[in-house]
Amino acid sequence: METRSTPVYNFRLKDCFIGAQMLFVAFGSLVLVPLLTGLDSNVALFAAGCATLIFQLVTKGSVPIFLASSFAFIAPIIFAVEAWGIPATMCGLMSVGVVYALLSALIRLKGVAIIDRFLPPIVTGPVIMVIGLGLAPTAVFMALGKTGDGSATIMAQNQALMLSMTALATTVLVSLFGRGIMKLIPIFSGIVVGYITAICMGVVDFSSVLNAPWFAVPAFTAPEWSWEAIIFLMPVAIAPAIEHVGDILAIGSVTGRNYMQKPGIDRTLLGDAVATVTASAVGGPPCTTYSEVTGAVALTRAFNPAIMTWAAVTAIILAFVAKLGAVLSAIPSPVMGGIMVLLFGAIAVVGMNTLVRAGEDLM
Image (cartoon, rainbow, N blue to C red; front, side, top):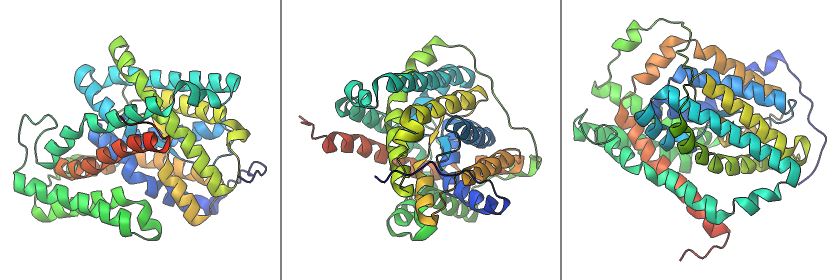
């Protein structure tokens, strides 16, 4: 990798539209996590914006990357919210940030090789696979028009399958055949097409959208102490921490700069730590580096880290648009179920790939 000096952070008004485009790329994945886990979409937007700004402060504005809610937390958050409620879950998620901080300190003392020593592929691969497969039945139940646990039916199965398979097919097709900016937003495309199909079928209830004010303060949730949630969620930090190293290598290869050395993987991981603690403190999902936006950086060649500041500011502003949250909440669950089928399967494949690339004996 070519090593260059740290890029100059250049905050310019004319970059605001490029920043908004970066948020657009991340938007589908960003709001998918709160929609699936029962958290507030507006809070997630606010948390992502604040997390990105915090990350830039910690890394001195040197890395052009956006932070938002990680898919690795979807299954654990769903379980934790059902078991202990959202405030306790937020306490457990704050402990994830503490794990990141400890890993950051360990890397600073022992070097990045310590990650492979203590978290080899034979450990991280199965962990990632379990995260993906753990709630696969939930995706199937939702795609069939049932509640997440399959105990009740909320929509006729034929209607639900029409919506879920439309969303799933759109996501797959855009991912495989999309060009340019479209290839970067397969999940967003699946949500939009599934939503439009649901509207055409007349199964969307817009009463909450009509009753919602245009602007309102997001419904922040303060954490409540819970040892159970902490013990349950802390190990989940392993997968996103490994993913973080890959994201930093990826953005470095795009920009031609060695971020592993400057600002250093210990500092970028510390940025994730502070961002995750902050996001969880207001009731949002943990925020980690987002690989989707790295693809947009590669496409646009927009390497100025200040562009991510504009993306963060845009996210914070949209967080106060209550109508947006109501529109997102009105999306029928089968639409999300169809996307979850693909999402959880893809996460499981990532875990399997981790083992295969490392040459582990799968027997």
